Image 1 (spheres, rainbow over the protein chains, first blue to last red):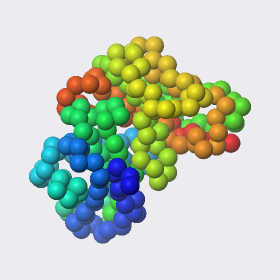
Image 2: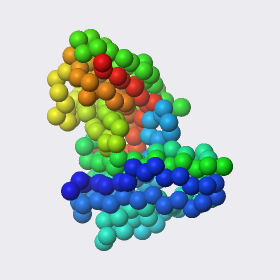
Image 3: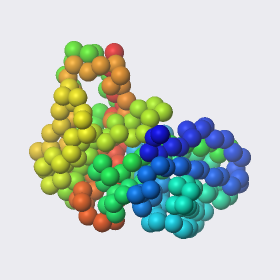
Image 4: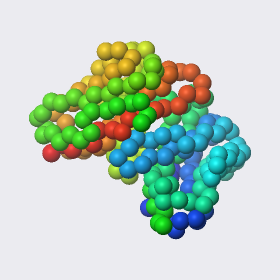
Length: 114
Length: 115
C-alpha cells in the first residue's frame, strides 16, 4: 500500500461549483498536512498547512484532516477558472516541511470552466 | 515569481550527452533541493543541501550529480541518461532543512526529454 494515495483525476467542474479534493494515507505517524497548488508550467506553491486533525479555512479554501480515518480534504468554494491547476497533497511526520520527511501525493488535476 | 529561478526551462538531450541544470534562489535561504516530477507519479526528492552540505541523497543513480557551490546556487549535472529519466526537474529552497514551520519555494522546473 502506498503511503499517500491521491486520485489524479482529471476533475472538471463548472464555475461556482464546490470542489472536494482528497487524499488518504497509511502512516498514522503523519501529523502535518499540506496542500500545494501547481499551475501548468510552474512549480508547486504551498496553499494550506494544517497540524493534526481539524479544519483550517483561508478565504474560499478549507483544509480538513480526519486522522482517525487517515483522510484529508481540500474544499474550494465558488470555484473560479483561475483555480484550474494540479493540487498536490503532502504530509510529514515532522514539523519541518522539507527533506525526506515530506511525502507527496500524485496530484489531482482540476479544470474549472466558465 | 517565487524567487527561485531555473534554467534552462526545456532541455532535449541524447543518452550520450552531458548537460547541467542550474538553479538560483534570491531568498537568502540556506537549504536547496532537487525534486523529480514524472507524469502520474508523486514528487520524488533527489537531493538536499543544507548550508552547502549534502544532507540527503535519496538513492539517486550516479548519472545525476549535484553541486552546491554556495547557498544561492544549485546545479544538477547529467550524463549518460536513460529515456526513463525524462521528467520535470524542480529545484526548491527553504530557510533551512531542519527548522519548524518552513515551507518550500519551488522554481518553475526544467522539462527534460532524453532521446
